[in-house]
Image 1 (tube, rainbow, N blue to C red):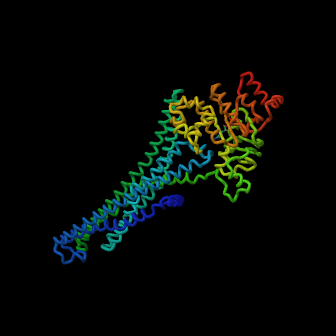
Image 2: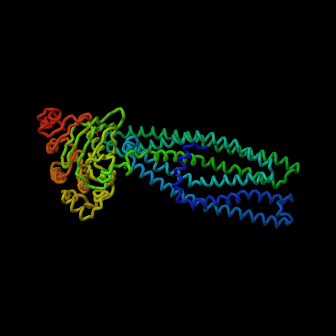
Image 3: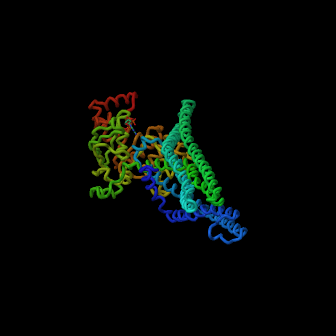
Length: 600
Ligand SMILES: Nc1ncnc2c1ncn2[C@@H]1O[C@H](COP(=O)(O)OP(=O)(O)OP(=O)(O)O)[C@@H](O)[C@H]1O
């Protein structure tokens, strides 16, 4: 019924249930009394009729007066019903509770895993698609639990008990009823495979829908400015239509299976009536037994009917398990090496937070996509404390160099060394603590300004004020309604780009990194803010290695050395004056910029 991979994936989810083992055990144990209570009901009703018709009854009713036997049977029936409902209540409650806890744990793990996956994975996975896996897919799994997958299990146990009871009462009719289940089971199996595929498509389309929605909301400013509302709405309608079609594809299976089961169940009742009626007429069987069988024949199809009713949910749950499994199975490409594979020097260096700050690229080649090399055999050394400017035309791979240094991506060939140690040998937290990065697009989190400056560093409020004062952030903080306690919107949306950059420089300064890396850090600032920042930056840069990607001559000129990148090759390097004298690409760019014609 289930593919091997499904079973593997379900098995992988089992540990999540581990902590609720006792609760689940109790629930499963309750299945047995519930099944007996359910199976005994038709028997009691049949016996009541047998008593009324003075047909042979079960041994323990023999010799009882009719009213007395009836009273006893009714009381027993009532007892069985109460027992069943009571125990089922306890069962449902526990199952739901376990289901919610299970999904919460899975969701937490998925989040942690998604955060740990490399940028290379995220490059090919739209945010909306990931969101769908963490939200509706996990919910689909919870639904299976909540809607009583265990209820179906209970029904199956009931079925077993009923089957045994039936065969022992009247084996021919019992066998007939059991055989009638075979086509239903086969039908369900046949439809399952098809439904599953259709359901996976539904989930895919839903992901697409979420991805589209998310992208449009994020780019709302551009959507409105470029009056893309109509176009984007039309595109969104297409996605909605695809989703609707995918859902339609599943409705058919869903309704077909229910109808099919209903049809077989009624046919079975008809056959029992016809055959049983004939046996009753021939006095081969009592009316009481026939009644028991008719009730059984209905009850017998209950588990299958329930299964069909929950078919969608259970299949949805399996699809969810598949999709969640796929995400959890994504390998974390960039992870710490085990201690046994690290050299002694790396272990020693890795335990130290700060370092001198020597950076070496040793024949590094890198491509985002296999067919499109971005960096080719790049080699350079930056001495401790040296300030290097990285220049080159747009798309030449400057930002990529920074990403490789931070180990956000891994080069296909070559090595990158920080203070003589291959960065793959360093613990990732140590590596990233030593590097202070100010990116071109600064990202701030929702929360207040102070939290954004601190991030993970434990810094007291006083120390934070002090640092902000030193960095010349006070005018900015005064402008904000609550200073450091000002709440920022998602992505720091209520600040200007320049303000965001000031904060992101401060965020790095607070961490006291060994190597400072900046990508166009001052691009969005007015001259006076920039002057303040420059002053602070030069203080920050003192005795620290710095790699600055700069497009402006002033920043570049101040550097000890300039590395010129073009199409991923290091084509020139030297000081500003050397390179100008050499009359190469840099000299041309610098000339153009001096005449105000271009950025570097
Ligand atoms: N995540 C990515 N997936 C695929 N290709 C990418 C990715 N990021 C960048 N690229 C490509 O790699 C090349 C180098 O990009 P990079 O950002 O390093 O350039 P850059 O020199 O920093 O440019 P700029 O000065 O415009 O910031 C570009 O051609 C870009 O299209």
